[in-house]
Structures are given as structure tokens and as C-alpha cells.
Length: 114
Image (tube, rainbow, N blue to C red):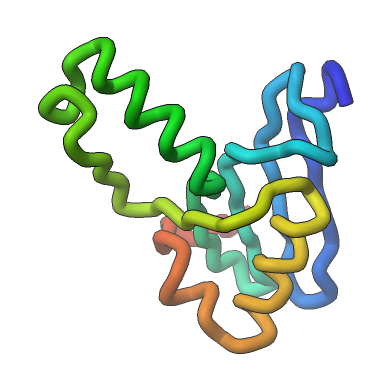
């Protein structure tokens, strides 16, 4: 997936945009910023991490002293998953939309009126 940093996926009622790193691999994707845009222009965003990726971030904070030496992690738009991978992430977002939970799980953004 090298050099393909933006991935748009049509979910049939919304578009999921994933902002990938150039080194990210679809099979092992464990940290990604996601944006869901509905046809009416409403937009919702989240950072999606696996439990393992969150642990890695917090261990990094232990080393740097951030977040009281890694004692906590705070983010208003964080969604944590047990397993990663592009297919798992897409399926999660698809299910959140299907169950009408995405608007309560992801952070709301200003509408895209273009």
C-alpha cells in the first residue's frame, strides 16, 4: 500500500475515508484516522486504534513523560478495537452506520457544503 495515503470506500450511504501512513499494510493496520461523510454533507471523524496500538502509545508516553508518564490516555474521538486490519475497520464502520451508532461514536465535524 506504499504511497497510497488516502483510501476512500463507498459504504452505500456514506463514504469512509481512511488516512493511511505510507508504510501501512492493509492486513495489519492498527492505527488510522477515519472520516465518514454522508450525502447531506454531515461528517464524523475518529482515530481508530487496536488495543495493542494503544498500549504502544501509552508505553511511549512512559518514556517521554507525557500523560503523567503514561498513566493515562485521553482523546475525544478515539475508537478502540480488539483486532486491526483494513477489512475489520471497514466492517466496524459499516456496522456502526447500520446500527445508527456512528453519529454517537465518532466526533461530529462541521458539514462539508461543497
